[in-house]
Amino acid sequence: MEGHMVVACKIEAYELKTLPILNTEKVTTTDKKKVQRALSDIIEAQVCGNKAKEDEGRKKLDKAVLDILGLGKKEREQVYEGLEALRRARLQRKEVGVLVETAEKWKPRKKPKKKKRKIRLEPSKRLDKWMKD
Image (tube, rainbow, N blue to C red; front, side, top):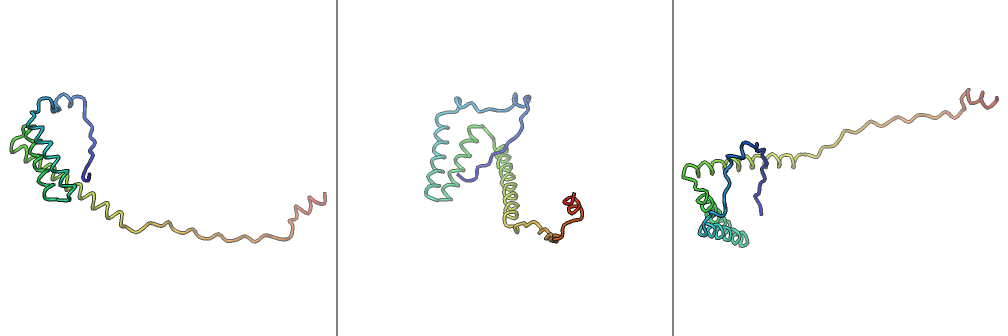
């Protein structure tokens, strides 16, 4: 599936005490069925390639999950604002990535060619002296 994003964050031990955790045992059967129906709608729409139906399924899923969490109207608006900010940030990173991917390929500068040394054909004076001894 497309659009999954993993966000890593550091949580301090003292924050864990106040971190809200959903107790799935307290979720009603009706609410669980709403979530399952919404997920089924999304999957069916993706298989068919129906973007409008997929968006509708996502809205149903959002509503079902936010109902389970017991969020009010203002809290839901804050959630959607936060998600929109994350979406904009993701698109900006994507734009930067595209610019980097399409940039000209970097090539290292060419090293100057070394001059060839001429080899003396006549033996050195030391070699002559050594051979005589």
